[in-house]
Image (cartoon, rainbow, N blue to C red):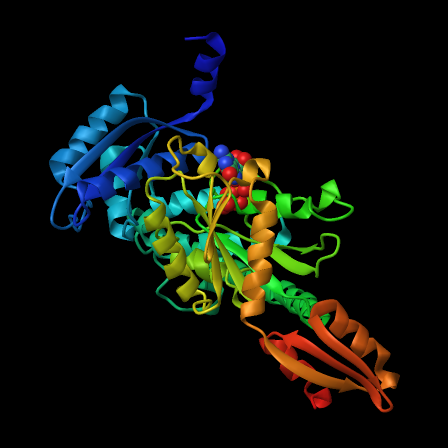
Amino acid sequence: MPMHQIIDEEKQIRAILVGLQTKQSDEAFARAMEELEELAQTCGILTVSQAAQKAVNPVQATYIGSGKVEEIRLAAEMLHAELVIFDQTLSPMQFRNLGKELGVEVMDRTGLILRIFAEQARTREARLQVEHARLQYIMPRLAGMWTHFGRQAGSSGSQSNRGIGETQLELDRRHIERRMAELEKELKAVSRERVTQREKRLRSGLPRIALVGYTNAGKSTILNRMLEQNENPSEDKKVLEEDKLFATLDTTVRKIEPKGKRPILLSDTVGFINELPHSLVKAFRSTLEEVQYADLLVQVIDYSDPDYRECMHVTEETLKEIGAAGIPMLYVYNKADKIADLPFDLPAVRRDSIYMSAVDGTGIPELWDLIEKKLQEGTEPCTFLIPYAQGAVLHQLQETAEVTGIEYRPDGTLVTVRCRRGEKEKYEAYIV
Ligand SMILES: Nc1nc2c(ncn2[C@@H]2O[C@H](COP(=O)(O)OP(=O)(O)OP(=O)(O)O)[C@@H](O)[C@H]2O)c(=O)[nH]1
Ligand SMILES: [Mg+2]
């Protein structure tokens, strides 16, 4: 083994992964463990061993059986592991017991995901959201951390004694509660700014398209390749694309306007994962509003992932949870270049789906056509009479809707366009 690799490994935190197989099939369980290892890797954690147990139900006190706990304790000692990561969310009690018995740091899948989010958060809003989700996660688990102190004296109840009788737990709890309230206030302010920005975009009347999908499927890559279609593509409009889970945590909206086409607003946002901690979904709800208000969703799928169907299922469930079910959707089967024996050439379009490869831009023009077609499907012909004094309205309509006819009348311009849902209402005053 080359020297630098040894040094690298030494720097990494060494962990043992533990999985409990209850209802899952062997395959699903193996996949979940693989994903857990990938999550750990994203955090810079080195998996030195994996342990698994089959059981009908988790053990209430320690999640896994006592024999297994002892086995892992020994393994941790032998392999110099400083961390044991469990595949499911542990209860506060399980946390406490396992920490005591294993003698090393204990983490669960939720804690791991929260840690990745904390490391990846770049914008102020993402940071606030992640901190809030983390505190919410820690709160019920605090109890286990201080029980050995017990309640101190301080039953006299006199004013001067206030606080002395409080346990460390209560102090911590208060501190966390205060911080959470602060964060909520700040988040509200940030989300107000976001609403203002969104309203501005809504007024622009441009169709809004949101990229959604499992983490690492290629959403950001697609946004970047779409940006390259612009007449004057600018590098600084690009977003981070990286072979990493949760490379994107913030929502980015970009205007895409290839020459001769009507512009759209395309948004890229946080990727989904199986069992995304609920506190995170909640925390990211405001960021995900961009998805909720989209005219069209483009679901990006890593077609080279043997479990892509499961990932699609998770995406659809998450969309339901954030109130974005029922929005028209296109399917991008991405990373098709990674499949060796593909029976067709790329790109391939099949109704609402496209098989493509965003990494080298194969299929981007076809995806663009598909988006235009799909947007059209949701439109209906409308005729408006716009008085000559309202030149700006006419201009806006021409920019955002597809004009199919125009006629200059004495009382104004008679335009026939294909309207999207919201548009008809917006120009209601001019309908003839
Ligand atoms: N081979 C191949 N790799 C791709 C393709 N599209 C994207 N990738 C790679 O996949 C990795 C993830 O791409 P991203 O665009 O960051 O994925 P994402 O969906 O935005 O992921 P998150 O933001 O982490 O949720 C990057 O290393 C890309 O270069 C593709 O069509 N083929
Ligand atoms: Mg991304």
